[in-house]
Length: 98
Image 1 (cartoon, rainbow, N blue to C red):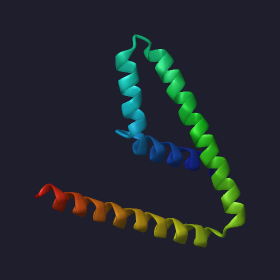
Image 2 (cartoon, helix red, strand yellow):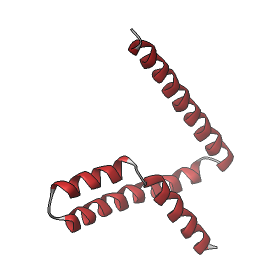
Image 3 (spheres, rainbow, N blue to C red):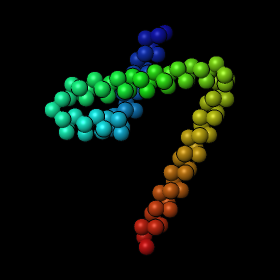
Image 4 (cartoon, rainbow, N blue to C red):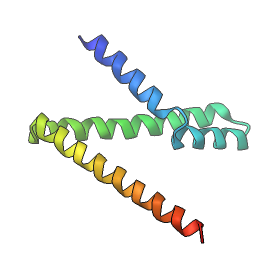
């Protein structure tokens, strides 16, 4: 049902954005100005625009690539990113010990 999809999407994005760089940037901008409403409107429009681009891209990709292949490729990309981050942190930790 569409309400389930709306709720799931809202909760997922809301939790993903908590403490994210977007929220921290909004907090920083709002704390340095006396115009929190303008910061709210600006950051909301930016998030809506970025999300619209993502949704349109996702819809287009879904028409070109089968769902199972898209999930497989996404998993592989996340694994590569994760392994890369682990290797970088290990390298930085060994450099800090000297």
